[in-house]
Amino acid sequence: PPYQAPGKGPVMRKTLVGAWRARLVHKLPPAPAIEKAYADPGLSAEARLAVAAEADDRDWQEVPVPAEWESYGGAWADADGEAVFRRTVIVPPHWAGKDLRLSLGPIDDFDDTFWNGVPVGRTDKSAPVACTVLRTYRIPGALVTPGPAVIAVRVFDYFGSGGLVGQEEQLFLAPVESP
Image (cartoon, rainbow, N blue to C red; front, side):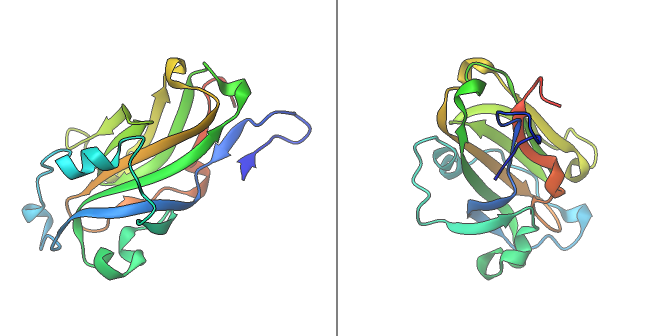
């Protein structure tokens, strides 16, 4: 549910905790050691299609966020590689045209993040210890219209666990000027 400050009227922030749609796009066997971690080849053609606003994710697995993807079981257990996570949010009318702050907490390991198919942020191997970096991206007001919007996050796990792994309070969408 959206966060609303007591007695303050309109929605101030929307939580991103809860069910997301996810698909393991390219599964790799677990890297045996950090010294043998996988190089991120960049957004694959399949992932590029999956982050598009109009991509059909109805057949995808519904997963809890935040969580390490290994906890999902099945193909996700013992997997490194590339996955795409998607969540549709409803943008309230009073947010239209405003810059928004998309806070995803840390992601294990690298990400390419999209708003309605438009790239809005990226963290890659140039970030030291990328899995600890808080992902906070700005959505330009020119992209913000009322109604449904799709947040898509392409994640590349190069070693160890993977996924959107932040604390619940780190996962939200809010106008930049909000507290």
